[in-house]
Amino acid sequence: MRKFDINYCLLFLFLGFASCNTTQKSSETIKTEQTVVSATANYQVSAVALKEKLSVLAADSLMGRATGSKGEGIAADYIEANFRKNNIQPYFETYRDPFEVDSLTGYNIVGVIEGSDPVLKDQYVVLGAHYDHIGMGKKAGNDSIANGANDDASGTVAVMEIAEQLSKNGSNKRSVIFALFSGEELGLKGSKHLASRLRKDGLDVYVMFNFEMIGVPMKDKSYQAYLTGFERSNLAEKFNEYSNEEVLGFLPQAKNYNLFMRSDNYSFFTEFNIPAQALSTFDFTNYDYYHHVLDEASQMDYDHMASFIESVLPGIKHMLNSSEKEIKLN
Image (cartoon, rainbow, N blue to C red; front, side):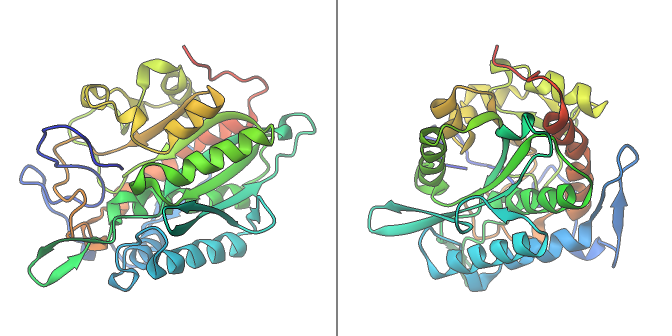
């Protein structure tokens, strides 16, 4: 998530929990071969598999995944290989959607599963997250690598896992694009490029659903994640109806700090004027390591991530299969 231009103590988002108000949980507590099984859908998401993916993306060897860097290129290769393994087709001729920012070349990674319905397949749901981060950060001890585990390797891994699950678990009537963005930390550059390209191609985008920092659970909330721009559409209402549980809710701070405009969903809102919103589990109390070198894979709660991904899958599947466009701007 882009840094806020506000005088607030940046506790910000994602990955793991290391707050003074949070009971810290080590990744070692994850049981070997543990799989969290949803009670409401035929989805099985492995906490161990999520940890494996996220540990690759947030490894020191990737040097913080700055846009255009060698480390970000390694992350792009890894995402492509995962898409290929799970039969996610490239949306363009290749998975890579290149763009220029200053003297750098960034690459969005874009995959697709085509819809099965002869009419609805021409409508698209876009599931997104950004896989870039800030590179190096303020040194803490001997560490100066801002690994970006929560921000936003956690969201990237969620999109990769959802792509795998949808590929395995039956047909979707609408087509679904999986977009992993570069250049978010430089001002939403990658998503602006992709949204503009898709609009010029005349794509019929129904909903854009963006995953921002979902690596740690919320505290003392009735819902599992908050939705930015909550009041702008009926997305949360319909999604909770589809899921038969309160998955998405309203967080006042998200409106106060205008988080709706600060992640890649906003690029699709401005280009397509559709419900394009981000969900997050950062609640301003549950993680201290936003844009910090301690935002590392070991801080993430993988049991939470597995359970949360399973909770959002039924709602996503319903968005892909409803006969009408039920999610609308207010």
